[in-house]
Image (cartoon, rainbow, N blue to C red; front, side, top):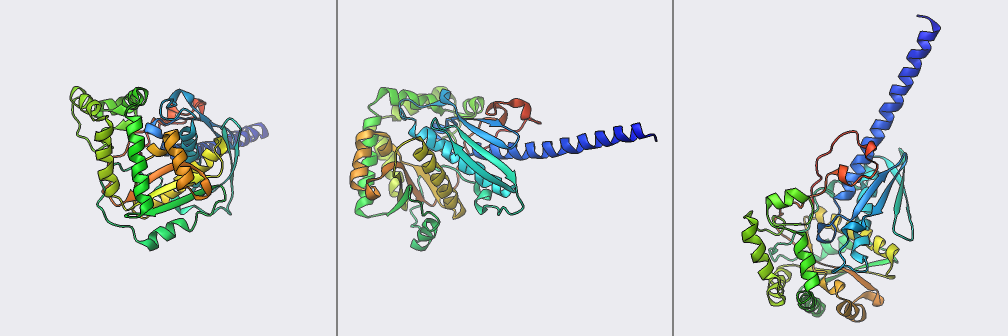
Length: 357
């Protein structure tokens, strides 16, 4: 074999090795984006897009999926991006990547990624695919105090606070009343109801056609023709009816959780989302169900009342949850990865739709 042929083989080998390395990293980055998309979002709107770079992933706000009636300031929108960011960073640790996060004033999130043998995998990674929002009636069992204390021990932020209120306490009752007040206001708002209905997926066919929204299955409803289910849902969107339903669900829960932040801007909302996601994954680890009762945080006058009377140090209320024990529900749909990655040339394969809620 002459020297020219040897050089040609060497070059081809180097190119093949380089290609394998790039492909392996690209597969890792697809896994990271998939984990990010399994975060929760308002009405399961999935308000994100992703760009994959050589050594970074950018999370972009997708304002075409905003919720102007329920979230006009984009507060919950950016909290959802924070949840997605936290999932991505947690998953990155399990794949051996160090992450460096930069957030612009507009809420564009860049995550630098570098391989390192010194990285320790975050144990919450295995619960990303298991977490779900469980909107069912819970079984009424009380979460032991020791479990609650253990849940809170890793959350020591000077920016975001988590308060847990026991059932049958005065504050639990006040928060329940705030949910009822929020329901009454929202259910008398035509824009709110119209927006909510636009995101409900009334049966299996409807849900699979969009891969987003609030699934009939996640609501615990049967798979019936839309001409049957849609009128029933519309009839139920009334203040008294919603209050009766939510009161039953709250009373079946063990605790109410309030997450607040010192500031109330894009960076604070993303930080709150990151804290929320870690807390939700920690709940999942303990087999504790959760669901949002965030109406009081969505109605300005009720939110102000929470801030003045209940929130620690008059911080800004961001999320209200009920927690307890319940049987799992079917998972909500997620958009296929190819639909949320902007630079699609990075995709080496067509991935299935990630699941969750």
